[in-house]
Structure formats: C-alpha cells, structure tokens
Amino acid sequence: MNYQEFLTTIKTQLTNRIDADVKLEIHPVMKNNGRRCDGLVIMQPDVNVSPTIYLQPYYHRYLEGVCLEDIYDDILSAYFSHLPTEDFDTSAFTDYRRASSRIVMRLVNYKKNEELLEDVPYYRFQDLAVIFYCMLHADKNNQANILVHNHHLSMWNVTVDELRRIAEKNTPLLLPPEFLPMQTLLKEHNDICKLPMYVMSNQYRTNGASVILYEKMLQETADLFHKNLVILPSSIHEVILIPVDSADSATLEKYTQMVREVNESQLADDEILSDHAYYFNRRTKIITS
Image (cartoon, rainbow, N blue to C red; front, side, top):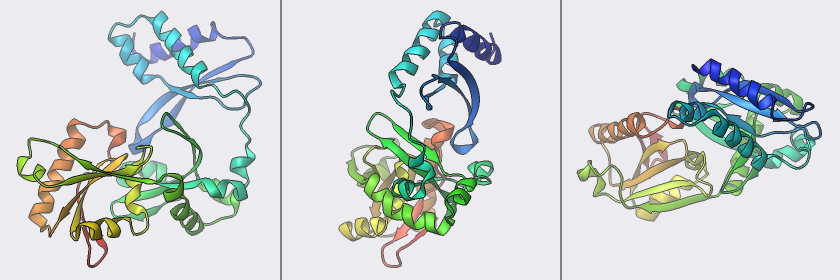
C-alpha cells in the first residue's frame, strides 16, 4: 500500500468508527523549512477546535509491520487524549487587546521558508527570519499556538514593527530562557570539545533558539565569562554557546562544519535552523557569520 492509499484507508476506516455527526478531514499542513505534512482533523459538533494528528509517522509504523487495526486504535487514542472539552474562545485571538499579551517570536531559516514568508509578517536576522505566533497554551508536554499571517495584521490594524515590539517584550516573559552547561557534544571533535559549552533554550525547550533575540541576553552571557561567544545553531529548539577569546574565519569555519554535520546526520529537516556558526563580539555587541 503506497502512502496515498494509506491516507484513503485511514479516512475511510476512521469514518466508520466515529459518530455520523462528527466530521473527519485530512489537510496538508506546511511545517518549518517547507516540509509538508498531512494532518488529520476530527471535529466534534459541539467543540470548535480539534488536535491535528500528523499521519506520516503512522505510515512509517505501517511499513515497519504494525497492523492497521492497531494504527486505527492508536490514532483515535491520540485524538481523544488531546481533545479539548470546551469551545475555544476565538476572541482570545481576534481581539488584539487580548491577543497582544500572548504574541511571541520565533526564529526560522529564511531561505528554507521563502514560501511561508510570503504569507506571514517577519523581519530578517542574519540569514534567518523572525516570525510571530499567538501562544494560547504552553506546558512541558505540549503547546498550542496560532501562526500570525499577513491578514491578521489587517484584522488587528497593527504593523510589523508594532508586532515586533510587543513580541520582544512578551517572549522572554512567556518563554523564559534556560542556560545549562553541556558536558559532551560531538565527541569526535576532541580539540573543540575540550572547550566549555553551554546550551541555551527556553524553559520548554521548544523553538528555543529564539532566546538569542532576547534583549541583552548574549551581552550578559559574554560578560559573565569575560569572553566573546561562538553560537552554534544546533536546532530550532536550542543554540550552543562557546566562550572564546576570539575566532578568526578559519576557526569559525571549523565550527560551521560541526553545525553542518549535525544537520545532516542528527536532525530532521524541519528542525534545522542554519547551516553555519555565528560569532558574537562582546565589545561591539554585533553578531557576524
């Protein structure tokens, strides 16, 4: 059974297992870095929101030999375990006076997300782009966010600059930074791994690379060590900081090679942030690559 046949089978079989007044649809969803996924949405008649269940992992399980009956059961179990018990108050998003306190920013790769960036407000940061979300819920297990699109700016009657100002204020408060020492990283690079390394993310460790945008965060970290910083974008979820006295172009290229090797061997496509290292100069307060 190929993937399209699998999707058809899933939709048919699950439709037979749910009530007649429940609507089931499979929609394409664009994820980070242009990755497209198929999301299953099951809408109950008395609830206006539903979890999206991505079906590609279930297809991989099918190819590994898991029987379809078990897959049907697992999908429905995942759905009911995440099903909200009441309607979502849409004014929490449509009313900017309420939504503004939940606007946060997120770093993504500019080139890999060019199609997405045609439809959402953003600003450039190095070879990256900063986009915006309304954070509805967050805990260690899951987050619920709404991506801000261009038409939302018209609905709210706000500009990108205003969105940026509010996000720069909100994000460190709603997604506080977390800074931890890292004992080992890529042990094959013994000469580099002798240096102290630190992981920086947010407290949920999800889309935490954006902490490098927090006001004075890099400056305070550099001042703590009285050194400059090499920044390794290990994924969209975190960065690794290495305090150094200096880093010439050859040294930075060595770190860049580390980043590329991790991207190619350790990360899913939609987890990649950038393919090179950055350098923060403590004196000039400027990031270069």
